[in-house]
Length: 141
Length: 142
Image 1 (tube, rainbow over the protein chains, first blue to last red):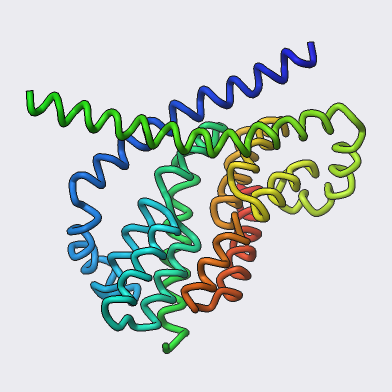
Image 2: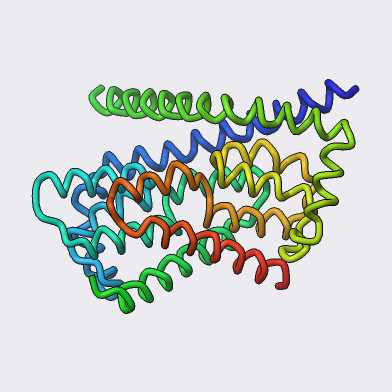
């Protein structure tokens, strides 16, 4: 009896997680193959300018929001190796990504548990925007 | 034919990535789920929950859910996911704990990434914990 509830619990969690991850990667693969990450950052630079980001910061920002903090940091590292990057850009990207990253994968995992999609997505974006905006005003460099 | 090849390539790539992440996840979820399941059969989990109940009341969560918050912050989200299904939370509580964990998690790994970027990592660590506490407080009351 005890073992049955245990195995049912694991199996239920495992199957749901697999399905959600599959859907997440279907989306991610489309986003990556469409070249949105490598070209799209120039387009979003206009929209995130008010948060203090320039074109340079927009590339790791977009990569981090969609793929995760490790990818975002990787793009920053790459940039630093090739050109001089403003310290404030690194900080602002870190602030935003610390609050909100890997939106497909992390959100998907909590949907498996039964969290409300809207209430775990919209507030997170709002918080990330509000905190980044405040930091861009408070910190000078 | 070319289209079919692209589609096949796409599908295989998705499947490979799903499999890899799924296995990484299960390597954490299964041990955590198992240990929590075992201690839930003993009085230990309830003792732990009773001890932390006053603190977790602040977020409208049962004391035991502190385990998910602690593991989520010290290890990663996968560990928290191994705990949450066993806490018998209602819909609002699941959304609250999810938002708290999404704001602040994997602090050891992620803070070390910010440290490597030579940015204000302590500031980021503290503000994430603070904001997770604030959203938890607000979401328990709406």
